[in-house]
Length: 91
Image (tube, rainbow, N blue to C red; front, side, top):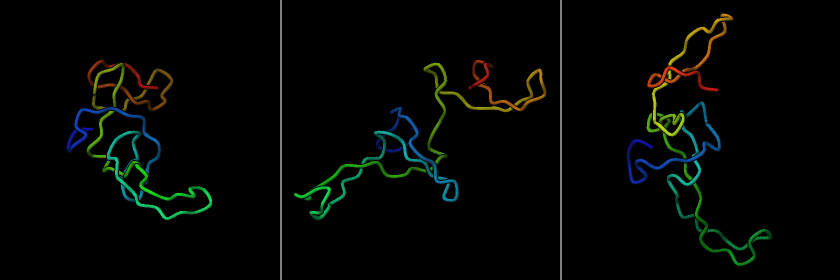
């Protein structure tokens, strides 16, 4: 995460909403949701869950280092992503 209260925290991307350009990242942008009692949660209460963040506030971490991502053609002519910092191909 690049900005906000969770700046410099890392997490795994759980899902991406392409239409809204937002992503849900594990452990980032936690919000409290008040729930009523139901079959799943008979007591109800307050549940902590991740809220979506804009993808412009996220950065790829490759080999433990935050890096920008570029695209280039490999030897076989296939378009691949690569780390601009190290030049290595990102799988």
